[in-house]
Amino acid sequence: MPSNTRIEVRRSPRRRRTVSAYRDGDTTVVLVPATFSRAEEKRWVDQMLRRLEAREDRRRPGDGELHERAVELARRHLDGTRLPASVRWVDNQNSRWGSCTPETGDIRISRRIAGMPSWVVDYVLVHELAHLHHPNHGREFWELVRRYPKADRARGYLEGYSAGSRSEGCVHDDEDDLETGRNTLEG
Image 1 (cartoon, rainbow, N blue to C red):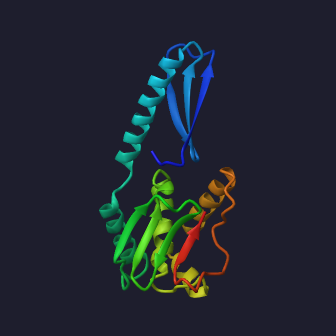
Image 2: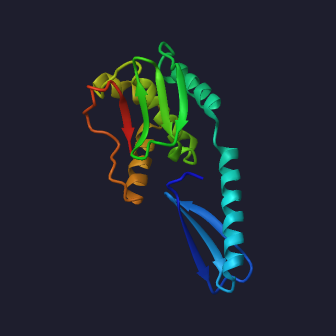
């Protein structure tokens, strides 16, 4: 489980035996019966956190799979003329969805999006892949990104997710950090 995840336990007088858990942004919510002792609550919270992590691990592609997916998307939507040198998940991007260093071809994708729909992850990959062609967010860059059929839908999803989780990040304006040579998709 990411280190920045909060755990919220909700006791319900209507629950008799069932325990459930789900992710709500960066909070893990565990629902338990109000009759549970503190020891039972702790045992069930630990068990539900392990179950959630195992389920997410099954759905979350590893770095190798993520790189393969990026190469496939580059070939399908961006002519496949510029392929990434590496694509990997990172845990240290809490205000960005992804970043790219065009000079080295390295792409980093925030693990925060690992559980999002695959078309959203694909959009973030296409966005960062487009930086291999255009390091800024000019007209040509956005023309490349919009070759991905669900680009507008995915941008809307990420904007809604950011607003819903009270994150101050926005998807993009037209400015870049040209001094560092790194391009990011914020969220």
